[in-house]
Length: 282
Image (tube, rainbow, N blue to C red):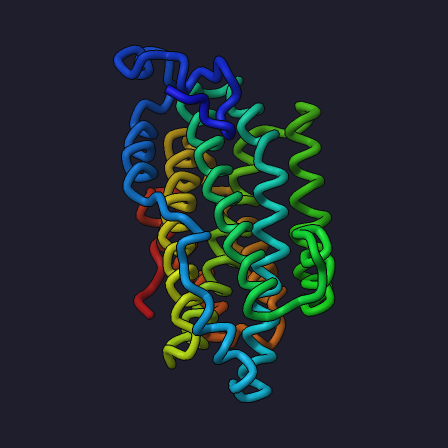
């Protein structure tokens, strides 16, 4: 069997026979995520973006502005998370074999997302640049400064702390899974799908729907990590406060009710996992 480029040779998650993983894993129930991942594979290069590219210039100016900000934001953010996930997996190796393996699988998802949004940037938005790096730089011009701070300063800082061993994996999970994916990505995806509901950009919509499915299991994995570790309730108010602040980083392209939905969904996930107080019905 060919070596998966996202899983280092000898990584415990692949080198240990499946029958033995439950003996090594502190969190054996995380193994269910490997089955989820197997069902969610998709190829970003197979999505037809030609109709989207043809329709783009005919969209109303304000509609196109909102879509540009959202799509450029994901172009920057997905590249960043794909780049900075390796220290999460390396740190998880000291906690749980299965957790480490799933982080590598998640990085594979994020790389796929980055390739999809780079295609959108090149073929639909027609951002300048002959390389992904040049298009990412062009995308930055369309994204609010607060959004860039999250993915180009805060996430790399936590990744560096994980690599240095100066912070624990649960600190990384709270930021990455609950704040960035659970709030920022959820809010952005919901806003994007709302903008794409008219069917004018079918390829982009299909890709975003695929990305959203991937992100659901990512967040679920993060919640399970916190649950299995018995993460103390005292930290949840801080997580939700950071999630509320971070969801606002999109600026006016994500409505207030969409931001609120994303944060409340984060709270509900934690509540269902037994990590927080119940949320009153909306």
